[in-house]
Image (cartoon, rainbow, N blue to C red; front, side):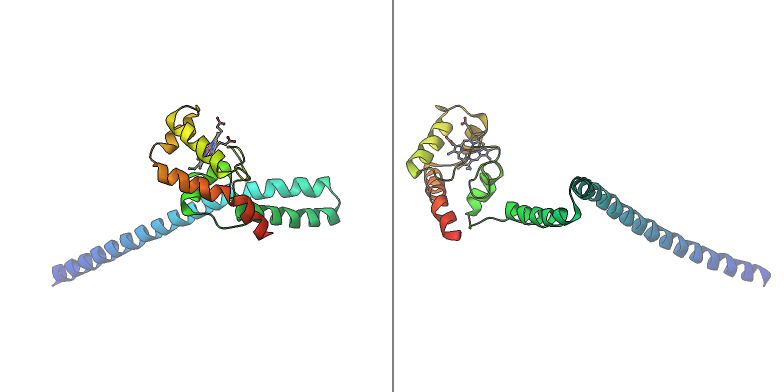
Length: 164
Ligand code: HEC
């Protein structure tokens, strides 16, 4: 009789231990997730904080308010495009030439004629005009694609004017 009771208690303890371990496991997992989230948010916070205190110190409170608003607007403008561009352009060219061809790493493309653009693209692709980045990028594009890109970019200036 006593042996049965002990066996029963042992079994119950085992089940409890297993459940306890399982809960611990999920707890640890959750904690890890929380830690990761905190870690991620930490990376972003310092960047946001660094800019503001400097500005507030450098200027009178009233100006810094306006400055802040301006900054937000500028940031928005930077991220948003004034007009729609093709996915083709956005994916392949915007990173260096700007979302509307305004130029960043690569030169400004807005305002160039279709002929000018197409000639540049052809010359980059053939290697006549030497640029490692543009050469590599254009190897997978056929003439038709180059032409449609040149055509699209040549209309950027007009599109920008219409958007304003
Ligand atoms: C990784 C950066 C990068 C990407 C992506 C890129 N370009 Fe360029 N592009 C450049 C650089 C740098 C130059 C300047 C090269 C030079 O003048 O030698 C340039 C030059 C040009 C020029 C000549 C401009 C001029 O003033 O003569 C044209 C046209 C052009 N790119 C179109 C495109 C198109 C279209 C795409 C997308 C298919 C594209 N680029 C993608 C970096 C890039």
